[in-house]
Amino acid sequence: MSGHVLVVGGTRGIGRAVVSSQLAAGKTVSVIGRHPPADLPRGVGHWAVDLTDDGGRARALDEIVERHGPLTALVLLQRFRGDGDTWAGELDTSLTATRLTIEACAGRFDAAAAIVIVGSIAGRFVAGEQPVGYHAAKAAMEQMARYYAVTLGPRGIRVNCVSPSTVVKDESAGYYAQHPEIAALYSRVVPLGRMGTAREVAAVVDFFCGAAASFVTGQVLVVDGGVSVLGQEALARRLLLPDERSRL
Image (cartoon, rainbow, N blue to C red):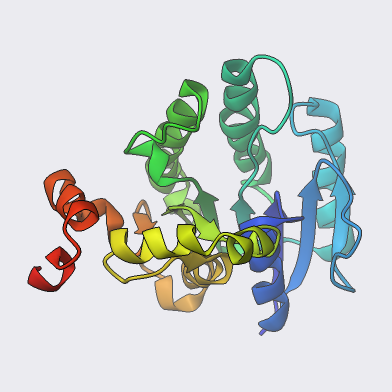
């Protein structure tokens, strides 16, 4: 299976898992990330770009399409990781850069193509460890997916959103291994009884990019093992009463 996939934010975490799965599917993969990784898989082209730099982003997109041809899929996973004003940083990196990248790529796709925006369940729920800008950006990304699904649909471009919960990534696997009490907590909280992985989120991205989702657009798929459908009272009982899980 041929095709050219651009992964924005593909140097670590879920993005890195998406790169690996798309390579395994025989795709040509280009990656945009602010900092060059030390061990990106062989054959993957990387462009070190600050997405808030309009000129740098535009040059990178020109080079990517010139080198590898029109895109069959665009996956956007970037988020703000800098210092300073987290509100402005999140909106510039997550929203403005996503909008400008999608609109710049709209004329660079193959006849049938897919865009996948990877957000977070913090777009619907409050994650206490994240600032307000993160929540606002993730919520807006879901609506952006719907908007572009409508406006780009006539061009044959499908646009969907994936909203994962906290998952184990290659970079965090060691931490969770050293803190088994966290995994034990998730086993009690999550209906499926465990933490998810970056590879499982990447598999959902693969679905949206592939032919099996050829008539699916404007959708938001939550990947969280079912934790978001568990009521708060039921969650509290699970934590307080050891036998409560078996009663549900």
